[in-house]
Image (cartoon, rainbow, N blue to C red; front, side, top):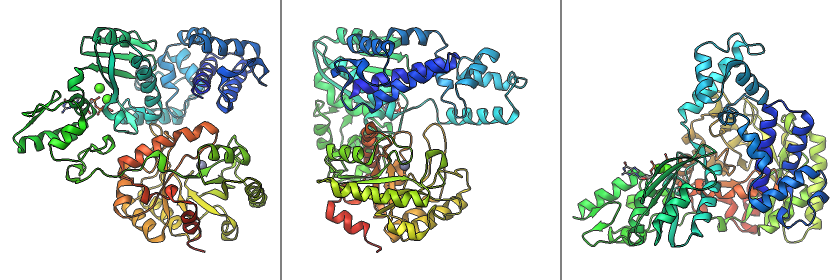
Length: 563
Ligand code: DGT
Ligand code: CA
Ligand code: CA
Ligand code: ZN
């Protein structure tokens, strides 16, 4: 599967670059199309006999795909990448900037990266450009502020696959005994400053050299025997520390952090007349595993996701945090009826592949016109179609649901009569996401209190690094959700992770129910689940507070609770 996704990403990037370069629309569309085909391909492309037999994949695309399968790269992509300033891809991340505007900024105002864009705005360089009104410049400036205040942090959905692929390469080197992800990435944070990797090897020189020579490395900042630091072409910084295998546990504990958690442990050690540093716990000289160090300090093993000095020091046993294996259903997914790519049958097949007992079809409601939201008459037919498929497929329950918009005043996008016909209602805010706290709280409260609503989908509507979303009064919402038995969603998509960790924690403490859904629009979106799980774990979520962990009967009971 990952080959498909990897090649699809390259094709998407090629299309973006072609667009920035104003190449023919035909070429761009064909490239985007191949990316989509690859994303939707069920079998691994590397196992396909004749790539040109796949509808929509022409000869030149097939050659590129074959090149990737054979060599792990596509030379046409390398060429394209070097034909524009690399920083322009970063500029594309600024909300409101598409390829056309980025090209204009590049060609007419010498913008080559975020810094030069900021500079161009501040020096008035953009003021007299055609098709670049005041309002547009203001919007760009605001988006830039947002990017700058959130820092140059990368979404975990990007950082984790990169780190895993590096790990996979380094693991195979001669002499490597241990290799692990540390830092914020191991703690499952939603954004990552830099990737930290910790390794032990009987041939540390080879490990360091191989790391600095990794294919994606653009700059080597430092190359030592115990510490190397590089920047990848994607812009991410990666640190590798190499330690004696006997000290691996102590080093892993230290470099996993958080800094605050390490301070907590050090203080605990001092109180016991011990000394903890990145090499060992003295005087017993324990250093091989994290477990031993925690045990010697009189603590249970603390999972990395809760190492934030938020009360974990008082744990008397390891909290039974939720795991991906606990998940038994997905209650928020889209089909081709709205903006998804799967049919009802395909969605059901995916759910069965994942071993779920239930899958909910929750296409968009009528106000989401750009997402092909369903008007009531179409929705009625859709319900029938879903029930028919449910009848025809054994071994899975397919719920006829909807992701119903919570309109700006808190009313829902379908009337109660239609809502009552649905097996499950996920109510989500999509528009009017700049409301005041007061308005947002009122709006979401109405949806939480609505007797036909089961789940509030991505409650704030934030998009990481792009959009703040609503800022409702969370304690109020959390206690209302508990009272009305409405679940609050952790949307597992790594762009969203909404509810966020701290709000999950508050909901868990209040005894409320959470949902972890992928909001899948295509088959590979189910792979986003792990980010939702990590966020749940950071919020100390256990299976008992998550509706996706209920067995079939318990879920049915929960869904019918208000009938
Ligand atoms: P990030 O990269 O900003 O997402 O966050 P982290 O937590 O990965 O931070 P990073 O990369 O600066 O350092 C990795 C870990 O190393 C950190 O979680 C704890 C440890 N560490 C690094 N520098 C210090 C330090 O100055 N003091 C202490 N106590 N620990 C440190
Ligand atoms: Ca880090
Ligand atoms: Ca670091
Ligand atoms: Zn959705």
